[in-house]
Image (cartoon, rainbow, N blue to C red; front, top):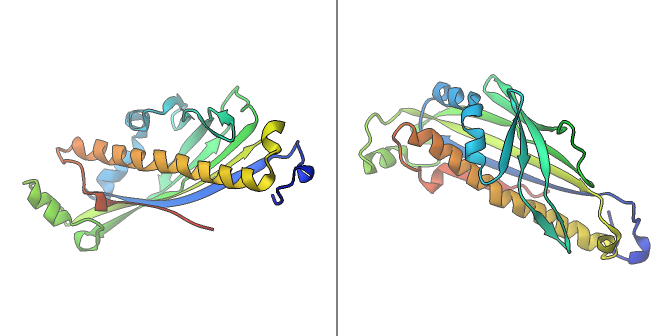
Length: 220
């Protein structure tokens, strides 16, 4: 939407905000072992998603409440559902689905997070695997590890009350896009670290170095 004059605003208009991020986390184990862990997401997803509230939705779905966010004097407590499709050739598809029996009050969430696994030699990793194992006196340094690559696409449509739309389309659009990106920057790195820790701590491996995680916003 364009324009910032009050006279140009359609009070019934729906504003759409969007953001796109890419990331990668390394798991210091072979691909098959990492894939087995990720496929068993019922055992770790809710725990690693805290402090977000998560309810299960069937065998492969979750209803997520991320807490209260807002700007311009208006706030929401977004709730949406995601479905985690079984992997095909090490590719995963996670996407939003309707929350059964729930009508979002004035907003709509479209979430897509394709992900794929790649096994790489330790010479091609982001972190220095050999140095890490030596530093922590760990045995059996692997020859190959797994990189988990992902994209996150998030689009949110919101119908604002009149007191917000009077501020002008340009202000609303810029603020909404910024807030949406800030939400992802708060949630995604925290979730990545928790999943990475959950996997490795079960194996007696301490927290991996920061270099083993990559997270960037993709600018359009």
